[in-house]
Amino acid sequence: MRAYVNAASPFARKVRIAARETGLIARIQEIDTAVSPVAPNTDLAAANPLAKIPALVLDDGTTLFDSRVICEYLDSLAGQKLFPSEGTPRWQALRLQALCDGILDAAVLVRYENAVRPAAHRWDGWIEAQRGKIERGLAALEALQPEWGSCFCIGQVGAACVLGYLDFRFPEIDWRSRHGRLKAWFAHVAARPSIRQTTPA
Ligand SMILES: N[C@@H](CCC(=O)N[C@@H](CS)C(=O)NCC(=O)O)C(=O)O
Figure: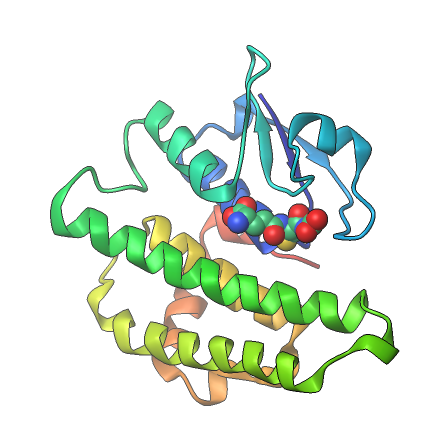
């Protein structure tokens, strides 16, 4: 299988962590892929019409996207390590994944606003609203963290990607100063090989 990813993308990181946690990384070639919302990567667009990473090309040529679909696909190959199969644990895991994806959507949009949109077209009120989603999302993660125990399922993969992305692109948010439980949790999971091998530099 071939995975279009890059080291900076938090959504691609979900897939890169899932590939390692499921033990499938040896079967996946990671292709470092530059993306821009205003200049679609043509190779990538041939595989994924949305021209977004992550995208996973299977051995039969089928392409899977987005991160949610790819992570669950990999998990299905590996025998359900990351996605609980049914009942309350499944809905809680999917809900946590959705919360983390939503925080990442807001953070990536702020990143694009700052790094891609011409300064003359920037809208501070819109950026502030996205930052509000990030802050409320972090508060929700902090409140949920005591329920996680030692579980490292898809929701926790997402949480690690959120916290790692904020460290990487928004160190000024300084989430550790307000969210002690997340701080301790993230320090603990940082020892996992899947996290260490995918930390954006
Ligand atoms: N919902 C998607 C989001 C993927 C996404 O936004 N990827 C970004 C990189 S972090 C991207 O490819 N951006 C290029 C673009 O917006 O055209 C997922 O979960 O995979």
